[in-house]
Length: 199
Picture 1 (tube, helix red, strand yellow):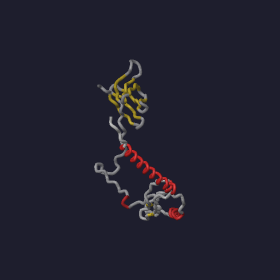
Picture 2 (cartoon, one colour; picture 1 turned 60 degrees about the vertical axis):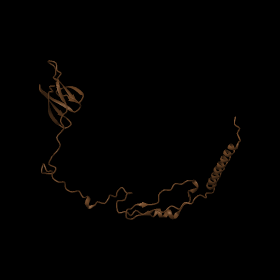
Picture 3 (spheres, helix red, strand yellow; picture 1 turned 120 degrees about the horizontal axis):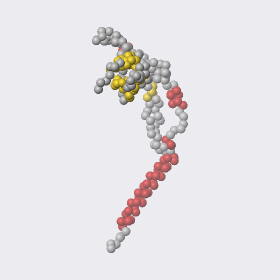
Picture 4 (cartoon, helix red, strand yellow; picture 1 turned 90 degrees about the horizontal axis):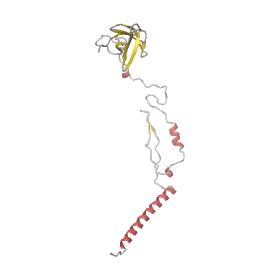
């Protein structure tokens, strides 16, 4: 069994005691600075300047405050007076008024539209045609001697309707024949004949 001399433990203890004393000294110094308020001095904030060309207020960037002691709670009347006397002198619209409009530039005037090459005149197209009725006529659902009924498909929905009935709240069945059905689109006042689907 080897015998310990104890010199290794003494070196570790001395290094640990020096490190602890340095840490305590540093903490005491920081506490002293915070208590007395003798930290690094910060320059006073620069007053904002007004640019009469662009109408913008420019100042200094925000600073980070490290402690409560660095805050200055006193009022500065000269800075307050400077802020109160600042006037908006820009050349464009006043952003603080809802009634002021931006100035109209001469280059922003709307030019007369060119005539359509195909029709030869601008705006001669007229109203757009109504959309096609997208019902499909699949067949009859009528018993002999009863009212004539038909199968109509709209998307995935299947309807059984007779003459005078309204399908899907929009389409009215006007007349039914052996080869097709006349449907009136009530939304657009448009009648179309839908042929019988044979497949």
